[in-house]
Image (cartoon, rainbow, N blue to C red; front, side, top):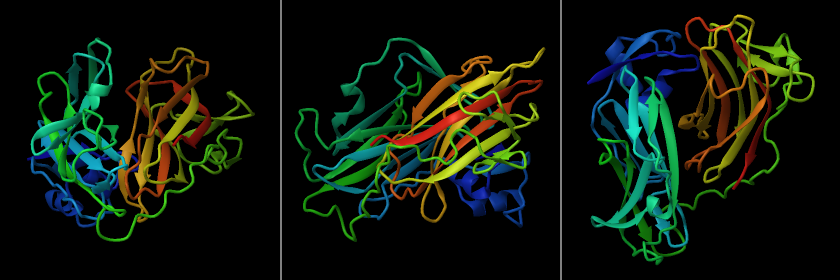
Length: 369
């Protein structure tokens, strides 16, 4: 099986391969590419995909994970470890990605989008949704080609009666609860063990301090050099004096018909949750047409600089008010094992005939726990 993908700004063959659950070598072979560094924005490449699973097993150094593909949707489940002792928490991450070349729309009966279950020898011992209530309103999730959404949950290793579970292997499942496919899931395995150390090998490094102050440099875009924000990476971004506070803000879309990117990396730690807050407004030009989306993304990297996670809520022109600033906020979820840095990225995506731009100011990242 195969699908096609149009290369976007910031893509590498490595990040594309991770997104689709394949390898760089497989993409090179499928497209007869000799130099993996010579892909360009706008190139359409073939992505070999399949329905094979790639699980890890208890006892490996990283967290447990598994990937499956169902009708153009790639599911990936991962945990922060493979072995746990009582008193520790299982951090579960579930990612849904559209690996097809078409837009996928999923219909839901309530506000619930996913569910997580733990089983021992086929018997359910814990279910995430049992502890929550959901609004009885129908909803739709739209996935453009290549788009991903990430969900997280935490299990404290207690069963439905509130007691710690036995020392044994447990299957961890993640379900997409959309209509007609609510029984599809991806599964991995963890082990609950006794003793002070949850498995062979050295204990993981201590979690770094959780800063409650803003981790970003120049969060208000007051420093500029040669027309670009001095300490942020940027493309198609220019300075505006229509700020939420201070003297300046960053305006995405110097050319309103072209994609714009604004990003900055900061140190981060596994098992932490980070909150992003920013102020945004749409700049409505006289006679302008408003057709765009704004993705506020968190990319998660390990010590080798490899991309190991991604969170990317999308805001449309209907979400962002005209000519007045509004505060937006979202959290990263629990970051996976191996996290060393996160990159906050604002990606402005104009559609055809768009004339308007988006202004960003007073951006903040803090650790919440």
